[in-house]
View 1 (cartoon, one colour):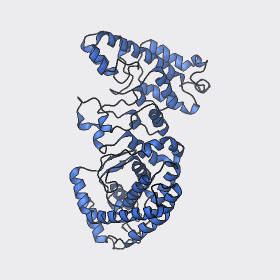
View 2 (cartoon, rainbow, N blue to C red):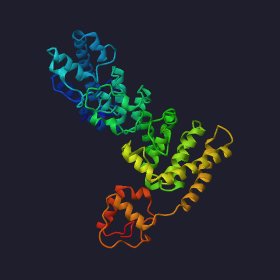
View 3 (cartoon, rainbow, N blue to C red):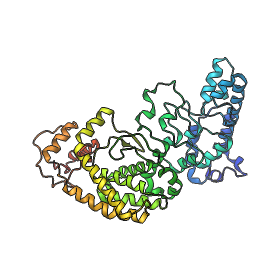
View 4 (cartoon, helix red, strand yellow):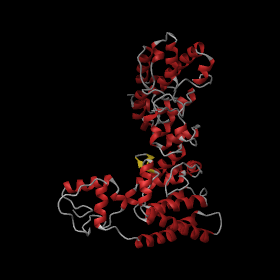
Length: 454
């Protein structure tokens, strides 16, 4: 790895050629040794804190440019016009994601290629350099050199912005032209691959890049509020997916995806109506001047659904992205089991929306008015509603857990659960969560008191 006195300099420094590590890599590259981009990425990741791009990356990027330019020249010389068009060789961009396809096409014609040109820059077929770049300065370097496959993806490989959890880099991709409005399942151009294991199969139908970015922002907005103004056109846009759930009957918009990210990534602090109201109020503050009445009404519907702990049929949180909740049969079963409560939910939401319209008196709503209504009127109504809701008996709780596969052995604990270490009322979200029961088992093994009083 380069020494600090060299790597701390910017990559356009006049002394960049003095970097001994970059020079050694250059010698290896010229000798025919191959390096994949993900290996180089490891080098620049390690020196990211040095406030500069390692010169080894610049050396590699320029060498890769020479290889790809030569490979593209040979391909244009031997391939037909239709093949060149299909492989995007008729543009001025550097050959990138289609490199493997070009090599395969030339080899099928028995064209002899220099071994250097056969070096795969990325370990995965169809990947572009942007799948392995997460540093914006390095991304600028590749972009300025002519690499333009910002949204490359296949059935096995999501586009670059789905691979990284770093919001600044995703913003860089957005600002340089990635398509965030097109449903992700329609972005795959390669249709000859087996689609049974396609990464889009687990996504909600109609899920777009805007939904993904909004969900990611909601998950980290407490630390990334400075990006709110840049993200406002994405998060507050009316791009609707095709999911089916009471929380958003006409489909989820990016603002709902952001709320899902905020509430589900911080579920321990968003278990009450007041917590949900505080969460949305903080998001409202970030988007002051961009929020309209439609956004507030959608948020009220979602927060009410969450506060009543109704089962979602649209999607679940899986790490840093949303995935399909269940198949059609399971959706129908869930909807049937919660039919009475969902009907009460619809009546409550209709009443809340009418009350909001009476308070606001017009199509335009200010941030302060929205926060005031949600923090007072909505919270009070929800607390009254939840207080009036009959709690589940202990026998019903045991039966529900047995349906989930929990096996109760020995005498059951008493019906009262006052010995619960944190709260005395088990929520349906906890009961339905496999992680909750794993934690219960861990507490039993440690000899600690459990939520169920065992």
